[in-house]
Image (cartoon, rainbow, N blue to C red; front, side):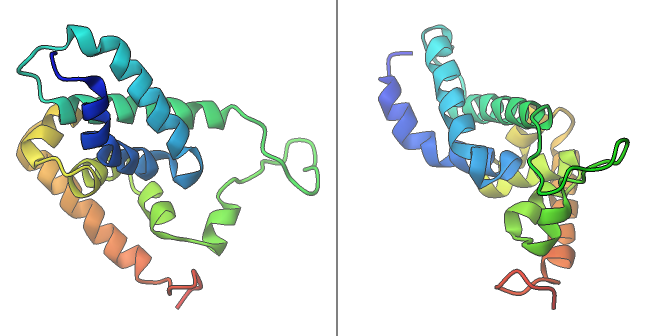
Length: 165
């Protein structure tokens, strides 16, 4: 590619950040964003001139965000009181108290969450979402519509303060 990489970062940085936030939430999104552009910078010289740069970056962002999720699942969870032996600590306990849109998005099934993130947050048209997810544009559109319908049902139960209505 002949275009300076810094122009790519400026043009697509916000889209990549939205995708990262949709998968990992606000806390780890910056790390996933940085990992995305580091990986992209390494691969940038070999990218085809006719490639869809936005779709390529969204694919890398999704993979880096999923790596972040997998990594955080292996980290210890700090708790005030140690659980009894054999008792499981539920990380979702804190989510119900302060449910926000990102938490509601994170609660969607993976395919719906990714379709919503790529189309509504990443701005990709459904044919490109289908390329990233695999499958047809109609299936990607269906997953996105189902995800939005679920968000409307679940997120509407919470007011602006994060309290149940």
